[in-house]
Length: 303
Ligand SMILES: Nc1nc2c(ncn2[C@@H]2O[C@H](COP(=O)(O)OP(=O)(O)O)[C@@H](O)[C@H]2O)c(=O)[nH]1
Ligand SMILES: [Mg+2]
Image (cartoon, protein in one colour):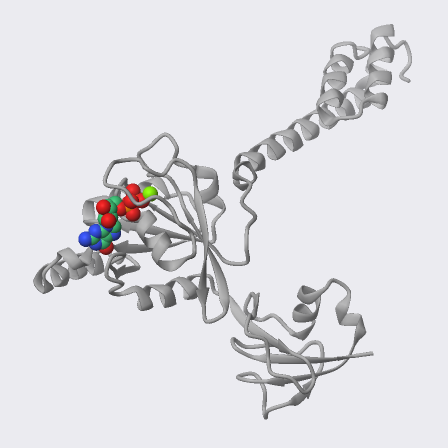
């Protein structure tokens, strides 16, 4: 307790010590600040309390902000997550239902999708999480979810829409892929013209039809590449490798695989063998630091 402290200050300090939530701590700090002793001897204390207040306030702001993101929708983020955005009736729901098990409403009328719809797309055994976000121009558009996604699929009908939506996601970090949809309605000549225009603007784009499936294989490949991840299969001694790979960032090593399987698992590994692109020969014995490549298979023998 500082010298010559105001009784109200002493009281607020007690409140602070007893507070159980950060919100209550912040209120107590506000009171402490307003009753801080003004004399020179308390200079250091004043600075300390004000700094503590500032930090706590920032922490609460951060927490509030992150709640506005994905957690609001209750969607758990998978290793590879992409959002599908675009104007109403651009074909977002159609694309989601073509690529995943999700069954969103596909409609002739506008703004049919009010809540983000989620599905998992299979890419040679690897799951890619796709989220249809309500139309960019609607009040249900969810900025938070778009900002936290790894990749952003922008469904468009023409160059104007590409420009318009590009502005909306200007600040988002995710890799952007423009997909010109409904190409089944275009002639070969129109398709060529559109491609040339998008190319000249340096867009990362693909031509697709969510209705006929045209261009979809190339789209899937482009999408997977946008995540810049590697797929590592695991196997048990004497058995076939698993169908579902583990997803890691490039330059990951054997230890990263073990730890992704189970935290602390690396310490139980006695011997590791690898097959695939990073191995010198099939079944090569390597150490935990061995760097892996996309499509490697790893076998662990445990102690
Ligand atoms: N011809 C054609 N129609 C499509 C295509 N994709 C979507 N549609 C149609 O466009 C309308 C809106 O589709 P929807 O997926 O609900 O769009 P959303 O509002 O962006 O979710 C529906 O009538 C779909 O059948 C496509 O590739 N080709
Ligand atoms: Mg929709």
